[in-house]
Image 1 (cartoon, rainbow, N blue to C red):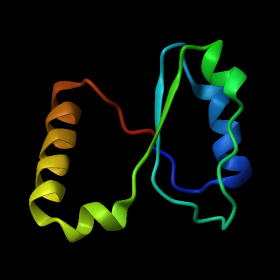
Image 2 (image 1 turned 135 degrees about the horizontal axis):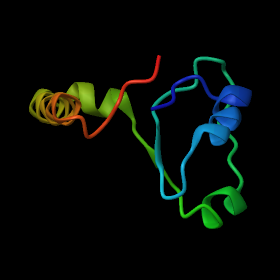
Image 3 (image 1 turned 90 degrees about the vertical axis):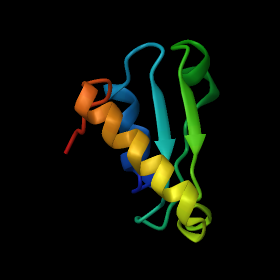
Image 4 (image 1 turned 135 degrees about the vertical axis):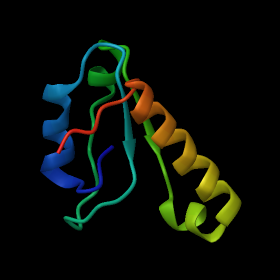
Length: 82
């Protein structure tokens, strides 16, 4: 999960395992995330964009998404890196 954009987003690549997925949901730095197609291709990685405003406008979708995330966290399927 990445919400800063700019150089921070680019540096996230160093933490990616092969086959990893990244969700970009903001650009707090004011700069877009720039990720090379080669970094995706040769690492079998995937990037998703999430328009948080769209999700927040739909309460049912927001609740479903948050419930799923918490379920994955509790099951140890995802980890929160702070």
